[in-house]
Length: 73
Image 1 (cartoon, rainbow, N blue to C red):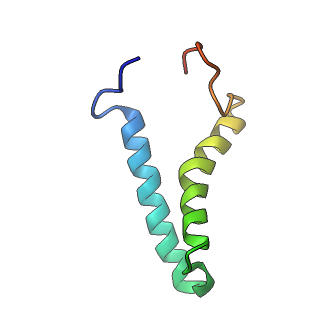
Image 2: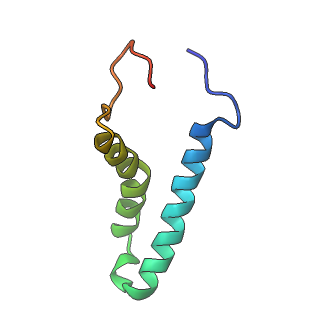
C-alpha cells in the first residue's frame, strides 16, 4: 500500500484539525483557566484530532475503523 500523495485532502484535513484544536484551546482557555494544565490540554487535542473525525463517521453511518481489505470511501 502506498502513502498518500503530498497535498491530498487527508493532509489538509489533518492540518485543519490540529489548527482548529490549537485555536479553540487558546480561545476557550482564556475564559476557563482550568483548561491550562497538563491533563486537559492533551485531552482537548485528542478530542479534536481523533474524536471529531470519529464522531463525523458515526453521524454519516460509516465505520469508525475501516475493515481490513475494504477500500475507504
